[in-house]
Image (cartoon, rainbow, N blue to C red; front, side):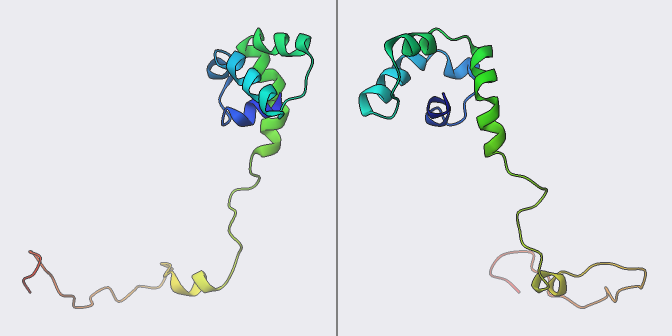
Length: 103
């Protein structure tokens, strides 16, 4: 069942159920899905809700854990200014351009 879910690019049961007949046939033809005729027939007539229940464990294993997947480091800490309780000197003269190509 997980092969059909990954072949459907993580589609939900409502989108995966209508194409399950062609998908099971194609996966069996390519040798990616080795099941009996009875199991293939059961996969084709499976309801969308049952498809979602059967794929829930595989989808949970594919989800990323944690809030962020970047490694903590000091390179960005020094590069990103953070406002603290102390006042910043924001009055820095800057060049303003109203139109491209003109100073």
